[in-house]
Length: 115
Image (cartoon, helix red, strand yellow):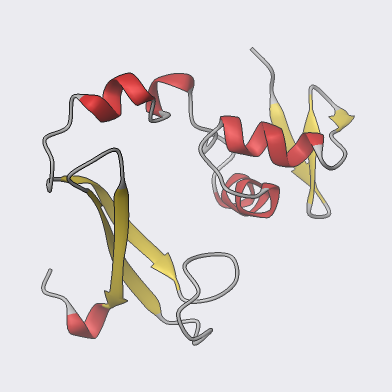
């Protein structure tokens, strides 16, 4: 298994720089939409890289009941998180499976949600 590290905002695999677009592909494989998000997570916690078991697959998705929550979490309202108004405030979000092979993410500011 590869070891991922960061330096100066760049992603390294086993000590070698991972260039774009390969870096975005690697980030996507580990559950991140963009490499910037993966780098940011690694800078906060060097063990933040997701393993393959944490990645949603069609097999896992098909076993989830329609109209049910799939996952939830918190993010920041800016370009590195869920960007609603670029306010840098904390958001809470939930992903809900739809009635077909679809899903939606609902997000709101924490002062609009109950904990």
